[in-house]
Image 1 (tube, rainbow, N blue to C red):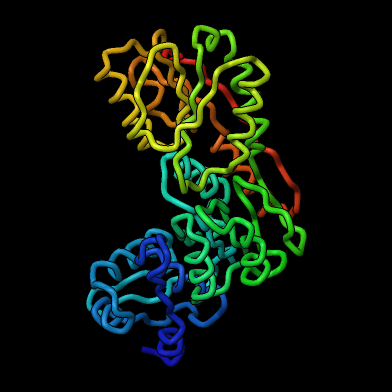
Image 2: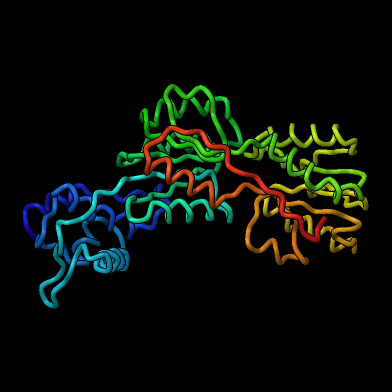
Length: 346
């Protein structure tokens, strides 16, 4: 190995915190080394076995990273001689940390749209902090490299009032992008693509009013200690009071007794499965005797039980908007559209 290759080995950092596969982390590290000149055309690379031992990752992971880079044309190999850098003409890419509060079907839609819009202009590292502000603080404090942007879904089970303090302290000025929820008290300008939770649920339920009129009571399933914004409850209460619906907040679905003439508004995907199971066991007709509205459109909901009515942000557009704000280096605040998709469950 050349001196430049040996020096490069000392710069490789593989994060156990990142949800980005380790082979991609390794591939991005090699690509970055070529971009910044640490590795140049024709430099030899360590063998798969050598790199596996040095970085302390599996041989299969290294092999997968090398295959990934060969497809991209960054490296090549000669039988019997090993791998080498094939080109120095590698486009500089922005390094972006995408910080999700949790993994879900709709977060995947955002991720896929965001990544597609950025294309090869960015290297994404994915982190999941489980809606735990303390864990997010630890994660940000232990990142092994700096990023051009930190794209954050700021949903927390506890400590929401401390979120701005953590962001101000641990995310550098000019590098924050907020998605989903807007946070005040950030000390610098930043772009955001956010939902207006109170207005959104009110408007969606108002649009569904003709179908809801067959029900006497609306119930919002809002689990205790959840990371969902309380503004959803405010919008729900405001709608029910405006249109004279009986309304109840259900904090524990396990204790809920399913009755006729009730329409349930469900937030969590796991709760949707439990709710439908309870209704089916009670042998009640969904869409006439009992109504179901589910938050967050996903492809399967159009097929479940002849279709589940959804109220949902346009998650694909959220990812696209966020990517374009980064590409255009704008600090715009964009309220993402929110839609009612009326199906047979109401």
